[in-house]
Each structure stands twice: as C-alpha cells, then as structure tokens.
Image (cartoon, rainbow, N blue to C red; front, side, top):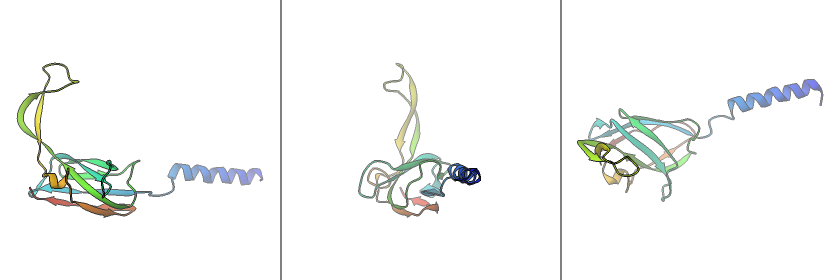
Amino acid sequence: MTPLGLSRMLVLLSLFLITGCGADGARISGKVTLGGAAIPEGRIELLPPNGGPVIAGAPILDGAFHLDGASLPAAGKYRIAIWYPKKTGRKVVAGSPAPPNTMIDETVEAVPAKYNKQSTLQREVKNGSNTLDFELEG
C-alpha cells in the first residue's frame, strides 16, 4: 500500500471511530401523567416482556423523560415500569448505612402496581427516535 493510500485509510478509520456507525439503538422520549397531572419526579424502566432485569431506564422530571446516550436499548418490544416515590410530608429515620438518627423524607409509591411491579404496559420501539407517552390512571 502506498503512503497516500495508507493516509486515506487512516483518515477514514478516524472518521468512523469519531462519528460511530450510526444510531444503534432506540432513542426514546415522552411524557408521563398520573390522573391527568404530570409526574413531577420518578423513573421509567424498560424490561424484557417476559421478565428479567431492567434493560434501560431514565429519570422522569416534570412529566418528561429522555432515554439517549451510550446505553440505548435495541429495537424491540419491552415491558414498561413507571415509578413515582411521592413524598408524604413526614420525616422518618433513615436505615443503614446512614449515620444514626439521620432523618429523610418518607415516600410512598404513588403509581399503581399495574404500571410497575405488575406492569402490563408494553411498547415496541424502533432504532432511531421514538416518542412514548403514558396517561396513567390511579
């Protein structure tokens, strides 16, 4: 190979490594409401449809979530779990490993189990951009 050919190959290889090979995975964004109101703070998770560990997840802030970055899920069908630990207004003693007598906000799960622990929500996602909106009733 000539020096010019080698230089061209190195430039192409560098460009490939810098830009990557395209959008490998599903970028997902959307909105989540519970009883018509945006969930102020929570989490959305994608799991295998027939059980298994969380494949991907993102925080929910002011009813919106965005799943993008380095660990995009592959295209396919997923079971969706949505969590919203709502503050009760009470303080409780934190458990271990917090220092003794540390007080934290008490929370209760505000989203019904049919949308998280026993979720029946399922969605199909494709490579590239996906919008998934969830209007939960509770």
